[in-house]
Length: 329
Ligand code: NDP
Ligand code: DGY
Image (cartoon, rainbow, N blue to C red):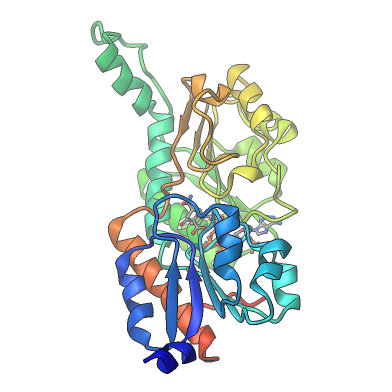
């Protein structure tokens, strides 16, 4: 038995993930799993210890996989599988140079994330959290013609920044609300935009014409701080900004300024910097800012499916086979 255990390769899993995925790993018969069995992030020292000598690493978007971690892992590390579609937490260049394969979880979370983004957009535009608070705090005195008014989607122009898998799924869900024009911007025009009659326009045109600006692009060196003073300055004063991509796409000081000065109407964020956002952060004091704790993909079934996909990506990588979802670097 001792000998059999020695033939199994080591994999390190950085968090307690949905059990469906852990079961796939444990039943594979090819690896022994070392698990950081907690809901809380693995401390850096434990991460470094955990990856040491591992052939596979199953990580989360909150784990920064950089040179230090790769060095601690050593030359045995052959595959990294992240329980996310975003991969901005991975030092891709270094990983590629070491010949390590990467698995990720595209597609399976697209619907859940698009749905949450629409919910956030509606909650922000129609001031739902603020209205709920008024009911509870006695602010609801009577029905008032000018009270708690917001902005509707019917007849509006929506601008999507990054019409990728999630961006397109958001656009498809918004169109039936009566959206008149669907604009989008990114590096390249997308043939599939025709499904939502999307118009590929320059960024300035998108910002100047949109009533709703929705950010769903990847975080890269080019998109970091894309949404800053200049960006908000080009938006309509009545426009609503929504971000469900990554917090670092936004300059939060500039967003605070735009929201508090009336440069834009409101913002809904599912992602921030840092995460968690400290409870005393200035953005949380603003009534026209709705902030969620990065819950885009958080449905029970989606997280279960992500877990299984991440496990299968890892196993395929360990066996040198075709991964269900490999990030082609
Ligand atoms: P895709 O790769 O399908 O889409 C990414 C989009 O980003 C593409 O449309 C791409 O446009 C655009 N993009 C990339 N680089 C640039 C650039 N330099 N300038 C402008 N646009 C750019 O990914 P998904 O739709 O599956 O996911 C998108 C992101 O959503 C993830 O990277 C992740 O960060 C985030 N996410 C957040 C979740 C949450 O819980 N809030 C859940 C899931 C994902 P082009 O092809 O033209 O370059
Ligand atoms: C991702 O997958 O990148 C999300 O941020 C979490 O599901």
